[in-house]
Image (tube, rainbow, N blue to C red; front, side):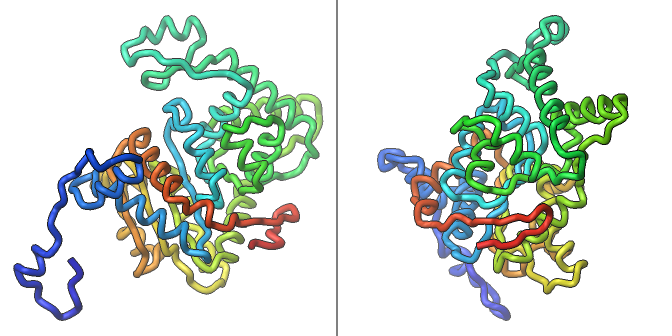
Length: 352
């Protein structure tokens, strides 16, 4: 129901949009299913609204789309789904936790995650060097191999500050895994930022590099998180409009949202994010960022007063495939021009 300013709604106004019961006999694709969910209720409808907002930003030719993702999405089986969002031009900039990039890069080596049960004997798993993520396992011995490789890559870099974007591009070009998020971003020139890189196994590996270089009396390379701020803000400044798609919440959510505040603090004109969609299991009443509403963020100036916004309280391994499949089957990515970025170290030379 749309209520005009100064108009007191009548009973007829409130009862103008009926619920349409989902008819699975008419469903042939995921797109059909999500379309039908738009006229149902509860989180079914909110997932459909999230898909619609994502479609709106993908069909806006002036919109740069930021993907922010947290949580154990790679062990959860969403590796190729995230990669597909990049490959099909449905996102332009990626921001995740370090764990997402690391688990993805681990699989780029041909290593796997394994199914287990939440009641597994964790002490026994430790004896076998197997790490449990709820009902999924990763091999800690193979993690250590990846750690050593990352440390070795860092050992052979020029000892200077790097943004996480620059370092992730270096890692992504080491392998040619078509199903890897890290590798696909590097191949397609999609900027990939990790604002809390030290809080991950990549950070552990770079700590090994740092200590090793110090012991050898040599200068280490460094990840400069403030350079990250400047680089991602330049993308925001050079974008006529921006949209965000958050999976879970955490640091990536605020990191992308606050680009508008940095833009203003640096003296650029206000240009709050115009589109916002989120899938999360958190709720706002605990006061945390992961569950805070976009309306709350409007009080900070992060989102435009007329922004198209939708949030679904749905677990990511259920909600994200529905939204991604809807977008892919809608064909919006095929019609969308992929954003291109040209960098000179920490300076964004051009964005088109």
